[in-house]
Amino acid sequence: MRLYYFPVAPNPTRLRLYLAEKAQGGCEIALEYVQVHLPNGEQNSPEHRTRNPLGRVPVLELDDGSYLCESLAIIEYFEELHPEPPMIGRTPLERARVRELERVAELGVLHPIARIVHASNSPLGLPPNPEVAEHFRGVLPAGLQLLDTRIGDAPFVAGEAPSIADCTLAAALQFGRFRGIGIDSDYANLARWDAAYRERASAKDIIVL
Ligand SMILES: N[C@@H](CCC(=O)N[C@@H](CS)C(=O)NCC(=O)O)C(=O)O
Image 1 (cartoon, rainbow, N blue to C red):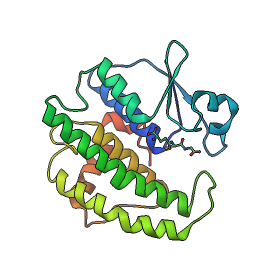
Image 2: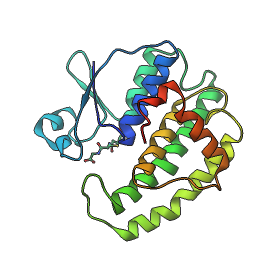
Image 3: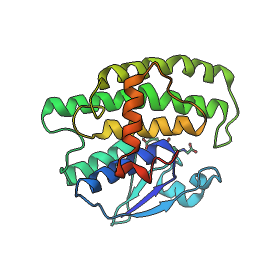
Image 4: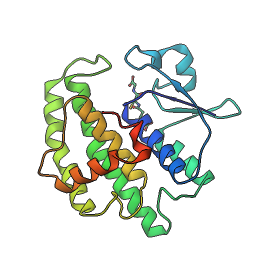
């Protein structure tokens, strides 16, 4: 299997973090990694559009030559194939909690950060849109505050073990740092979690900013 990705781009990054967490937990998923250079527009080449007509990464190429897109669908596919160590909890309630927090990390943090970045200083060269950037600067604090409260003094976003919620949040915060969007001291739990998560062996080669 082959994984098409680009470093720091948040959606492939959360998938790579997931794979690194599985490996750290003893489940090595063998993949060939292929970079699609987003700032050069390689995602829009006819070759990549065959893999994903929307021109995005990540894309997983399966051994039969077919393609699977959407980072969460790919994660869920691997998780069903390799349930250990669990990255979406064990019990129905744990699994719901992880998914709840992962959705908050994506919709409440990753999405606003991505909109601010692309509306103010887009690495893809998109035109600036100050109104959109301002709007999402106003949206972001609610997601950060909610996660700060929910993390509390726990080691991971969903409690005692790493989960896909950590992967999405770490990928989102790195993409923010890439364009100077940090988390301020109002979010002490989040800042502590972020510093600790970046020290994990699984994160070291992937969270580079
Ligand atoms: N919902 C998709 C989003 C994929 C996505 O937007 N990927 C970005 C990188 S984070 C991309 O490839 N952007 C290139 C472009 O829009 O031209 C997923 O979760 O995989």
